[in-house]
Image: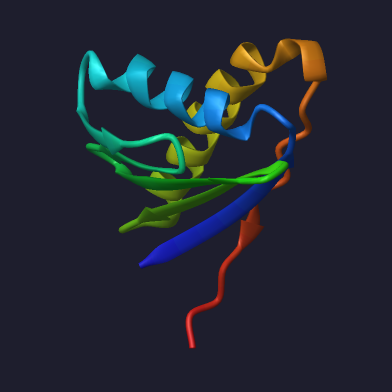
Length: 97
């Protein structure tokens, strides 16, 4: 399993979480509420958590290639939705213990 994490500091964390989940729910399996979401792509999963001031994104995939794809997809849509804030999505590998 490959895993990557990114944190986006924004006062609109819950808004972006819901916007991302609603967008992808038209085509794939998605579960969400205002604080947490799960987007189940064919090439991996994205767990989203919105806390006060931070949108936390964790992507998990079977291969490095799928992880790269999932991060690129989530990052590009978040950048599009949050364009006014000009987010810099910096994915960091998560090392499992």
